[in-house]
Image 1: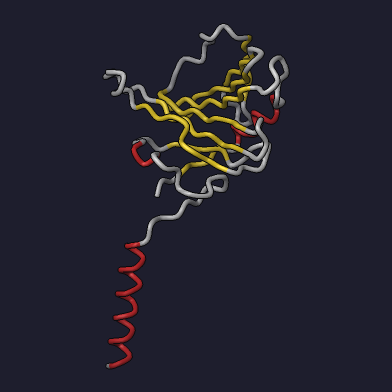
Image 2: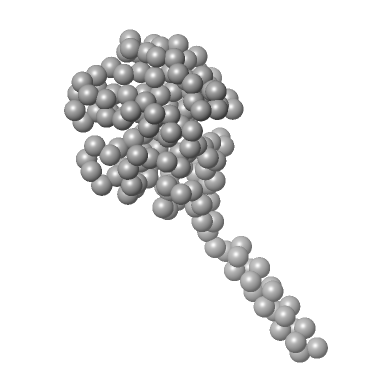
Length: 171
């Protein structure tokens, strides 16, 4: 009788404690919960590979469109991945699915990710961008070049980042 009471008490205590703890981040490049990301209502993915050791991941920009008076459901979420060196800075942008046709005036190249997904690569001398659509969302990798006129990462490295996307679970 006494051992059953102890077992029930310990089980109840563990149940209560597990409900009171904050969920942990299980994404390999995100060391702690990204502050401010809890307001983003869409399920999305983040890369598990960067061509450098990630020191910090943070919310770079979030706009649900309401701030600008939009009622069309357009939004944008930008997450930055920063390394130790000044030029180790890549932004992953997530927004409503878009037409992949180039509207920036930059040189564009149609590419395919490893799974066959159609994507576009843009290079304009000051930035490199890879963009593609997946499950109703548009993903873009933005690299702002430290040295203008010189591509910082190879197209293969950028595709490897895109191929590494895995669901990000908010706590």
